[in-house]
Image (cartoon, rainbow, N blue to C red; front, side):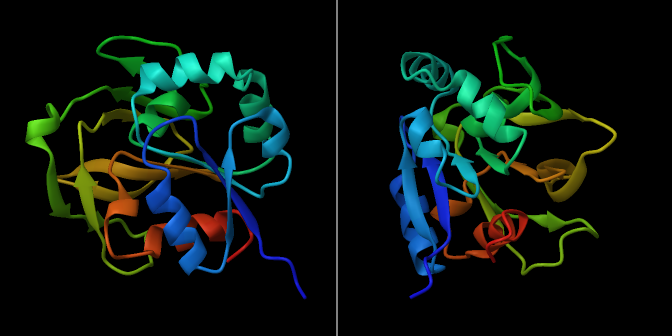
Amino acid sequence: MVAKPRIGILALQGAVRPHVEKLERLGVEPVEVLTPYSLRSVEGLIVPGGESTAFLHLIEMNNLWDALLEFSGEKPLWGICAGAILMAAEVLHPAQRSLNVFDVTVERNAYGRQLQSFVSALEPSPAWEEEEVEGVFIRAPRIKSLGARVVPLLSYKNETVMAREGKHLISTFHPELTESSAIHRYFLGLCGTA
């Protein structure tokens, strides 16, 4: 029997269960990553939504900082909402520490508070060849600038909300909260497991 591909989800806090369910439906074994050891067995890592400052604290508590940096040099990361903040090169409003593995500047909570959450159809760029998708925005960050090697994939009102840089992916919205699995499939392609 062929082993299923294994994709990690940084399970320190945030929206873990919806990703587990999406990955299982796509025939992938989800691995809830809590330690540096559990990172070794996965082909890619989803850094889910949550609260970025809480993530920073929990990453330090679990001795994951260096392990995440090492992993990002070898395998794909996908940062979603708070995960995108953690991956960004620069964080504004307020400034905070980040892994600096994705050449974007992001502004935290730029679309408003929890009460201003919304769902919208997203506009594909020429680089997005998958099905149309919608985005669920919950206290979402805004991508303020893109580095030269960053490829925009999806936008909302002419602002990039999902992008790829090399093998890494970020989205400022929550694909795990929609019916579509298109973005999860796209990430599996970056991991070589689709």
